[in-house]
Length: 184
Image 1 (tube, helix red, strand yellow):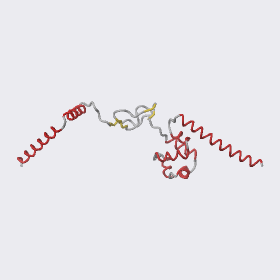
Image 2 (cartoon, rainbow, N blue to C red; image 1 turned 90 degrees about the horizontal axis):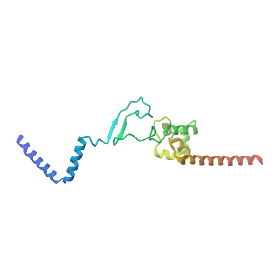
Image 3 (cartoon, rainbow, N blue to C red; image 1 turned 120 degrees about the vertical axis):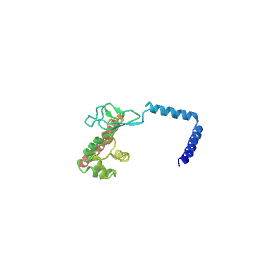
Image 4 (cartoon, helix red, strand yellow; image 1 turned 45 degrees about the horizontal axis):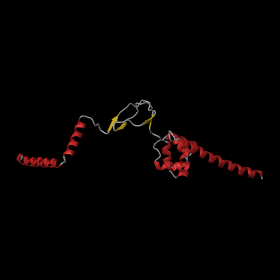
């Protein structure tokens, strides 16, 4: 039985050498240099984990959770905060201020987003998807956008002012009609 293994092994080795001869030398050299760099740890892996204590302040540079580092770089930050722009607490506060009772049902009536989904946002079990957030923006306008974004741009402030001017003009028109009806 041992004799039968050796011819098979010698055939496999011959096939390996034939395969290696078919590989262009520049590819083989590139592969060898890559293997040597990885062996020397000159090219670290793309993803690595860093575990940090849960008792730290999240605004501190020692983050409070397991952080995935891509290409051995820390997550982007702006100042001392993570580079996350969406503010769920701001959105929840805006919706509850607009509709203090039955918030989910009011949002469902105006946007078509189910009340259960809105309740999940209010309970912080989930966040709005891009589609749902787009629907909210179309219905409620720039004031919602300003509340739901951590650092809104200048144009958002101007859009909120323009929206408020339209609301004031509508209220003036309504009051003028009511006054005209009373003066008759």
